[in-house]
Image (cartoon, rainbow, N blue to C red; front, side, top):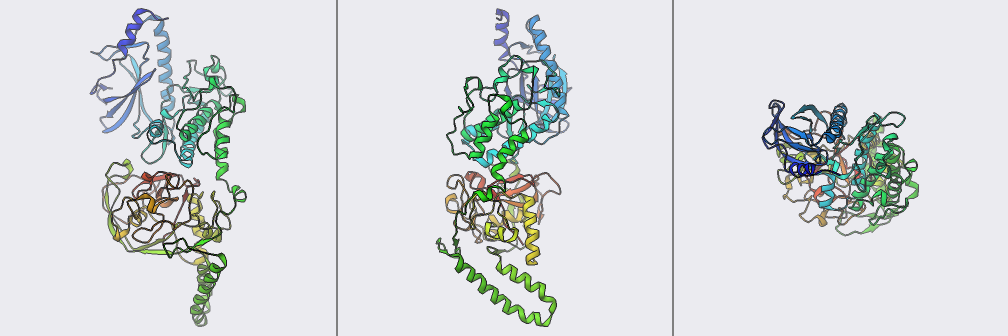
Length: 587
């Protein structure tokens, strides 16, 4: 029990932090404002003066034991007994900060500097501008399953990187995950992280955090430090996925009686439920033992093995030349294709007589005539202002002038019928010939395009990001709509508010150029590497010269209307697949 002096110190501590404009390291860093405070430290927004960049500065400051001299900023400890405890935690703070500073992973916040000053310790890290996952869900509500799985994979990859280096985070939760403006997620707050030996023994002896709903039972045990393993972080990762999908934290582990008492109220796939239950088993030995094992359970729903388990959703083909959803049966469609083939052959045969070398050309034309849903729209080149300066993510800024040459772009998203005709398989989760193909990676699209070009003799490709946005805005015919073709999202797009799955292409209103589904239905891969904009005028830009993620555009059925704006940018790694991600062709 604390004495009166310590109680007085506690009240005083709550009112003290570094003042704005305070400096550290001889003026190298300047404090801008306090961002937050926990039991073990205070986080500030700061400026690194020599590089003129914003940084986050974490100060070691145990709220229940530390005091600050407001005139000198010096930190002191109240009692002799407290000093030993505080010093032990301070050494841990420094040791772990130095360890994390050696980590290099896009899903882990980068630490730039570690030092001691004012009688305490600091580390300086990347300032992640954006909302925490907790703030995002609290504001916008439950996330669509594909979006939640995307974040889970990103954070899981960061945890796997840590685990491979015998390091645990031990405080994975929505408040410790930040969402960058480019759509990627990053793990922060490593104050409770621990190193462990190959046998599972902890190499540090400080107590361990317990975040209700996210900490498994073993984190409440006094002897956890005797046996650590990745499955402790995996429980928290599964609980975080639950939070994204349900909009609330799961029941606290010490209040749970069995593995079956996790309550699912939202519409979540069977595979994802099974993965969450596996990650959150009370007996740690029965959980998924590695991040890779947990992620593989989530990825089962994205596997090609699902193809046989799913039946064709729609055997009819939509006649998209009218505004009505008229249907024609497959036999009638085959007759139309056959007539087209005869017409093209009749034109080409005389050429064949003149030059026998035209045989390959003949084959390619016939192949092209027999490929379904391959209609292209000519887009006249022009100049437009790319991006947005309104209340948007930073990666849409600055608005800059871009000129693109004339090109052609697919009238529709690539359908499953076309994909099957070229590739001979169907990776899509939602089955139907007229549905957009999804669950395809950027790498998959390149293989599809290679085979398509071999069959047709043409040079199909993905659109550049600039071409995509120019076309989505309506090209030279643009009327400045909020979405592609209308200010009313329901008129032009299948999004989370009205979709909940993919829908046949071309069933919503087209945009000014006659393009369908540029907003919503599925996200669409672009050719470019993802990178930041600049304010220089450009002609036919092709994005960054290198990178780790490719651009995707257009939003989809699994995201809300905000993501369906023509300027909205997102990015994914080249081998990433999920059932809200497809593409359209360009020439």
